[in-house]
Structure formats: C-alpha cells, structure tokens
Length: 326
Image (spheres, one colour):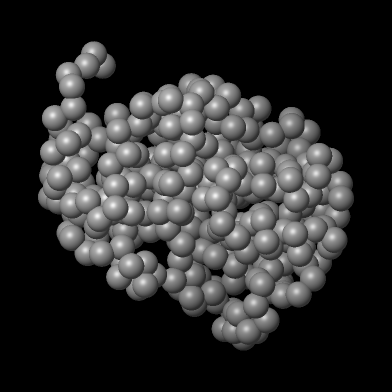
C-alpha cells in the first residue's frame, strides 16, 4: 500500500483517485477549495465533475496543505498548473514521483505541463507523464483502460506499479515529449472533429480529417524532439480516437457546437469542466509557426475559435488547398 495524493478534483483526478483507492492504496483527493472538499466528503460523490460515482470508503478529500505522499498525481488543468504548484511546492515530498495527467499546453508560453512543473519544482523533481485513451466515467465505472507512463525508467515503473491489479493497464515509455504532446495536440484535432459533426459532414469526411490530423500531430511532435511512432500508439492515435468518438467529450462537444454556429463565449459559459483544446490551440499554432510546420487543420480551428471565421468557410479553404502527395 502506498500513500497517494491526487492534486485536482476534476473528473479525471477523481476517477484516478477512485481506481487507486480500490487497489488498496491510502488516497487523498485534494481540491483547492474547502467548500468543494466539504461537499464531496458529505455526499461521498463529486457531483460537479463526476456525478454518479460513489467514492470508496477510506478515500479522503482534503483542501489546504496536501498530505505527504509516496506519489502524487498532478490532475489540474494545464493553465492552472503554474500558479497552483507554486503554492503547493513546499508541501510536496521531494523524492516522490509525480504523475502528471494534464493534457494541454500553457497558452502564454507554449510549455508542456511537465516543463511547467520542472520550472516550478526544480531539476530534481521526479516527473512522469501519464496519458492515453481514458474517459473518466468509464474508468471510474471499472471498465478496462490502457495508459502510458513516460519518464525516467525508475519513476515510470513506480507509477506503473501503482495500478497493478486494477482495471487500468499502464505501459512505460521514455518519450516524454511524444506522450505529452499527443495528449495536448489531439484536443485541437478533436475540436475539428466536433466541428465536422456539427456541420453534418458524415463519416468519410471525419475519417479523413482524423487521419490528416494525426499527421499534423506527428509532424509537429517530431520537430519538438518527439518520436513520430509515439503518435501512432495509445497516447496519440488511441487518445484521438477516444476523444473524437465519446459523445459527451468536452473538446468534441465544443467543436460540435461551433459547427452548429454557436458562439464560443456562449459555449464555454455553459460548461463546468475545462475544454483544454480551446486554450491549447493558440500555443500549438505558435509552436507550428515558430518551427515552420504546416498545420492547416490547426490553423482553421484557431480562425474559427478566435477570429469568428464561419466553419463552412474554413471547410471550403481546407478542401481547396493546393493538391499534394499524401
């Protein structure tokens, strides 16, 4: 049995806390807000982010200083990591592995989540990326899922071992950049997939879009030091498939509403959870331009999101690009 603190009370953090507690670990789910902690403890359910999942007995819910742990799960949205971990750093056990499950890029810097954590926590932090096709309600319900833990081998293996015997099977990898970028970039392509659905373009168009989308992901990833083959594994195409087929997925839902002609402010105003792709898309496009990588789908998604370009006009421009070899 290990002591584990899950830092972040969103749907994914809560689901992982449930799985790890069922495995027999001593688990604390940390939330930044005391009233959230009190409400979850009283109901034994995270009604805001993961309704319908009863928390196992013994799963603690805390705010304030997180309990010292043998391992931590960083489950905060990417845009909040820097501020939150600047405050949390003094309370974290220095030699404990930290599994980061955020999927995005910091909008202001284009940094990956573990790059942000490295800047905040220092070079000695034992950081692991944990990513893959994983919708929180299914994982919390005990349905099988597979993830990839990427980082220094010993730390990655420690995170892998935490899930041994659970319904979550974890593989290991050394390609931190590839696994982490897969989780971030697929959210932008998922927005495009939702737009495709909202426009009613059918299965052929969506299949083509996702295929060209994974090419964009691998193209940028390779320019940033990732291994192209990583994008054709669990944390790349696997996660992309899940994100673009799960009907209530956040990024897919936002894209669908955009395709139906709804304004972004209205869409986001009706959401509790964070659609990481919206905020990561600007950072992704900035990296693509910096490294001179052609990412036409990402370009059009950003124009729809932030320039008010009609989705039908974006589709027309994509279809009318100069002919090329595959």
